[in-house]
Length: 198
Image 1: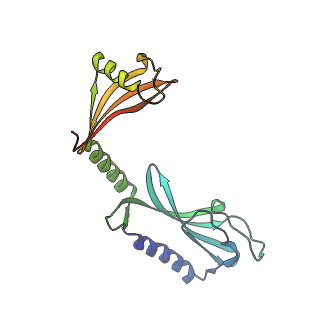
Image 2: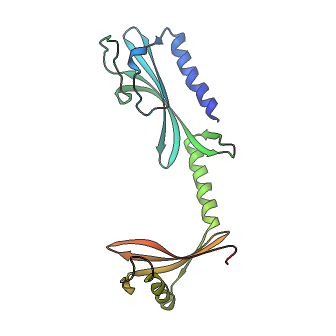
């Protein structure tokens, strides 16, 4: 599903309320609350908000259309803001971002399609990289000597070197050392070789 198809879903929801006798209510839509767009529709004392937001859920971006009813009775003042979190949700439709084409166009689908897409992305990413642990004491000692020449590492003890590993990608090879310093473990890069250098 493309973005303009989501816009059509939003438009159809709004049109449904307009056809049911609701009218646009100007004075409650002031100020941005981070949404993509919103419209308030009024029929008598009831106000319905149709809201679209761009959110990150479980590491996936999604566009959410929320239809909600204003909880509070309005005072009919000229400017009276309804906050997005102060509506009673009637309907919520989620469109998960599956990817972006080369031309920049985004496409969307269901949560299950997004989960499948994420698995494929992770599989492709891990297939691009091969990680090899170098476990011998000789390699650790050599890495420690190189590590000590790096900024801020001059006095690092040998016991801080947890492991040495090589990450191989399609066009590069990188030697890393995992270091434990001040109670936390992190990786330091010791050497990177690109295609021309390998």
